[in-house]
Length: 470
Image 1: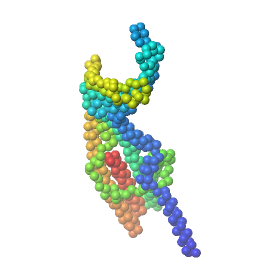
Image 2 (image 1 turned 135 degrees about the vertical axis):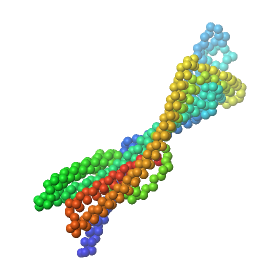
Image 3 (image 1 turned 180 degrees about the vertical axis):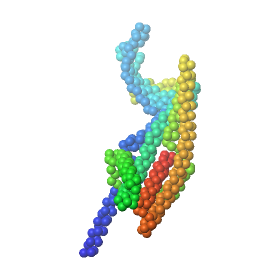
Image 4 (image 1 turned 60 degrees about the vertical axis):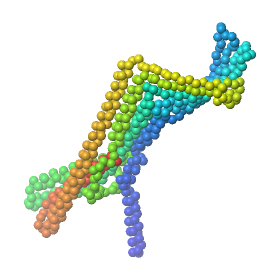
């Protein structure tokens, strides 16, 4: 019977333990819930990934492009001065090829033309009424002034790439800040829970002090002012508890909101604060990395520089060297025309230059000045942000060190207050002090506990802020 009872108690204990363990929620598990369930966070994450992929658009500017055309039509003859008469020519034109711009400025095209020409109403037997014309062509264009050495292509690549990189880092910064805020919400809920517990204990102790004061007043061993002071202290502790409970509800609501739950109740058991770890935490003074907002500012400055370069090139005169070389095949059969495309029976080649320039020179200069001023402003903005980041980092390190030292001091004060209470309790057991004095010392101890928890909360928040540099 004893063994059965022992087995039953052990089983119940294991079940209770498993239930409690199943409701445990560590910080990393909570952050995982936030990453998976919060729509705002996932929106930033998807935007980050999409901007990273869209930045590859810059590569399209120097990749080959396939093109093709097909058209059909006719041309009627003006017979006023024609020696060979026909009513009209029905034409079909097909073309396909590849075009590519190179980063050093060269534009190249290789395409293949097929033309089908059929005469209607032809009155000359010496002319073939139907023929096929094939024409493979290689065409090259090299800018010598505007867009020289591929300056516009490179600027467009930079503009596209860094514009998406800027968006990527902005949304990434939002996601990181959301994780940091979620981590703070986790520890804030832990801290508020502890403060509620301590405030409850402080209220019970204040009520004991009031009972003690009433008893002394009834026995004419105390003053009425002591009773009034004790009552005021009870009401003060009730207010403190009510505020702590309200703060805990708000913290719970914020905690749940991060994981997309609309409730001010948290059923899970959260991690406790490791005060020894926080006291001994080693703080590295080296900045691990630039924040994402700084990287976004750098990318934005590169976009402004690229746009200024594009405006500068757009207002330069165009002076291009171009040329092409093509083969020609002319047959009455389509298959023969295709077979003889490269027979060099009808080669065509030319080389030339092309020049154009904007007439409104003054307007172009103003536009260029505006673009250059925008680029200069973006550079200055980036340098200012870098300077501010260094200052923010130093302030963060200073606050970490100060709050860590404050935590050490508050723990020492808490230890001394605890020792003082324990000593006073010993004196009470020997009849050398009063219950009232012990209760007062317990109030001091509880306040010291709250101060320790609040200092730990500040330090945990600063540790979370440090992650924006990682």
